[in-house]
Amino acid sequence: MPKYSLVIPVYNEQSNIPALYQRVSAVMDELDDRAELILIDDGSHDRTLELLRSLHDRDDRVVYLSLARNFGHQIAVTAGLNYVRGDVIIVLDGDLQDPPELIPDLLALWRQGYHVVYAQRTKRVREGWFKRLCAYTFYRILKQLANVELPTDTGDFCLMDRSVVDLLNQMPERNRYLRGLRAWVGFRQIAFKFDRDSRYAGSVKYTFAKSLGLAINGLVSFSIVPLRLSTYLGLFSAVLAIVMALLVLYWRVFTNSTLTGFATIAIAIFFIGAVQLISIGILGEYIGRIYEEVKHRPLYTLSEVGRKLGIVDSE
Image (cartoon, rainbow, N blue to C red):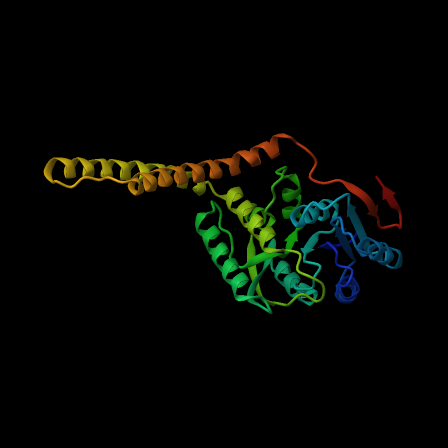
């Protein structure tokens, strides 16, 4: 049985896999006990799965999971966590932005008694100012609104004790924000600061739309403040309507001024309509997640599993 399990999701990463395996295997060779490398193919369309099969044939430490279609990064990581057998689990990305060479530093903190060691970014190499600004703003807004203490500037690159992973595997929710769930379970946690590298090769998989979707998912999963916001908007519009009614009454009784014209009516209608649509949209986000949860579909489906002993199961 391995003591260490490395979980790496990959999606159309054929250009990164050789360098990824070379660097990760070098780290695994230096560990003080047996390690396994779990690579999850998230429905790739290139030669990624073929390369994973080849690595599995060459190295019995390599385990690969092939998802039947693209389920997304968070579900791919979840699949890997379901299959780990080690006492210590390290999650990192397959684009080499999370340096595998930092794994011994994470293990040193685990040996000091920490159950979760999350890598906290201090610098983002070769990322545009707009992306950095959005990430900086999102993490701080989420930290203020969430009902748990969520660390800022952290991704999925982390080390987790087996006890933490067992709890994560027991959580049945479909819309998963793993870095939030990791904080929610508690235990002793500590940050490890690092400079995030640029992508080794290939194109960025987390587009702005996907990043925005993950941000909304994290906000809805760990805060009910958006629901309260719709209530506050309704109260504000009601107070504003009362104030305007009093002003109109004052102008008609005590002055000769009258409010006429289409513009005033149009502005009031558009304002009330915007409040209503925002409130319905916020409510719809929460109802949509309830709908996804009550269907009780499996989180993912597997088409192929490469196991330790060289056995390949097709489902």
